[in-house]
Image (cartoon, rainbow, N blue to C red):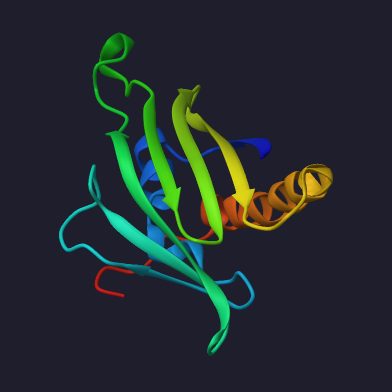
Length: 157
């Protein structure tokens, strides 16, 4: 089991940071050899299922996930400001198992985003855990930076 933690500060309001980090299809947009497909219709929330497919053609693996906790930032904070948001994902694949929690909380005019993830990769010995954590911090750190720094998509696009 490998656990890693990331935190980023952004000038985006908490609601916009939340929207970006929970846009599941956007997660695979620039990760090499990875594509994310949302499997359930409707707005995201508890019960949303999606799969990250990593590989080329039949050479690869699926990382299926489900949202098991969904608490977007709300207006219940002091002075009507957004309170913190929390999303928890459970990974239930044959190759990758574990969970991830994404927390978004207001911080001044912007927000702080924290990402904690536990990964278990089938067949990978425990001595590889530190390497897996380092790789996870690097890959997800780059992805989080991209999601929070990317321009908002145009309506309908």
